[in-house]
Image 1 (cartoon, one colour):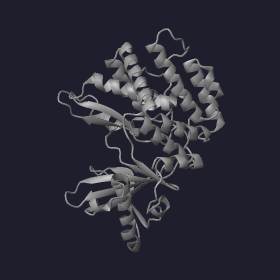
Image 2 (image 1 turned 120 degrees about the vertical axis):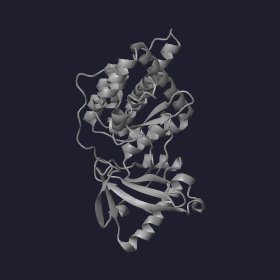
Image 3 (image 1 turned 30 degrees about the vertical axis):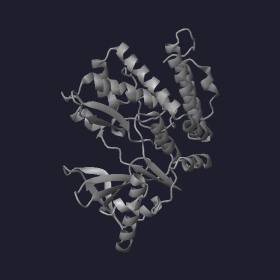
Length: 361
C-alpha cells in the first residue's frame, strides 16, 4: 500500500438509483425480497426529533425521533417483526421478550438511514438494525460483499425499502486513534489485513472506503489477537470514474494506515498477501458461480453511473492492467465482471508460469 502524492478528495453526493426488474428478480430468487410490515416512508413520518449524544456527552450525526402516541405501538411492533425476519426467519415465538427501545435518524450521507435499537428485556442486551431507502448500487455492493468477501451479510428488501443488519466492529477512525499501536495487536497481522482489504475493494469496485466507512473486528486468539476489516458502507459501489477511488490506500483519512503498512511490511510480503486475497476471491467466486452469474447479469444491464464515469474508469483500468478488453465495457457491472476475468488470468499466470496473459497485478 504505497503512499499517493495526490489523495482522493470528496465528491458530490451520489443519487439514489432505482431497483431494476432484473435485480428485483435476483432478490426474489435468493430470498432477499420479503414482505415487510413497515417501510422506509412510514418511518419518515415522525413527529419530533432530538439530537442524540454519545456516551461522553458529545453530539453525533444522529437524532432520536418520536412518533405520535397512537402510531408508536403498532410501528414498534412492526419493527420487532422485521428484526425477527432478519434474525430467525420471522419466528416470533423466540422474540416475545424483545422490545424496540429507540429509533434514530441520520440525515448525513446518501442513505439517510433509520437505526433501530432492539433490547432484550431479560438481560438488557441490545442490538441494532437499519432501515434505508433501497438503492440499486448499494444492494449490489451488499451482495458482492456477501459473495466475494470472508464475511456474510444479512439484509432484506421490499419495494423501496432496504433492511440491513448491524455490522459490529471498531470504526476505522477510532481504531487509528486508539487501537492501531496497541501492543496486543501483532503489526504484521494488521498490515496483512489492510493489504487484503485494499485488494478486495479494488477488484469488486467498492469506492469511498475512508476510515469511517469500515470497521476493524478484533478477536482474541490463544496466542495473539486476530484482526479482520469489514466494509460497512456500500453507497459508492461502482459509481465513481476515478480508479484510485476504489483503493482505500489513496484516501487521506487512511494515511496513518498506509504509513503503518510501509513501516511493517516489505514490498515482497505485501505482494504475497495481495496474491493470497486474489486467490481467495476466485475461490469464493467459484463456490458461488451460479449466484454470482445471475447477479452480474443484472448488474451489467443496470446504468449505475453516467457514461462519462464508465469511460473514465474503463480507460484507467485498461491502462492499469494493460488489457484493451476493458475498453469494450459499457457499464460498471461489465467492469466488475472484467475485473474478475482479469483476476483469473493473473492468478492462473502465476500458478502456470508457461501461460502468458499480458496482465499485471
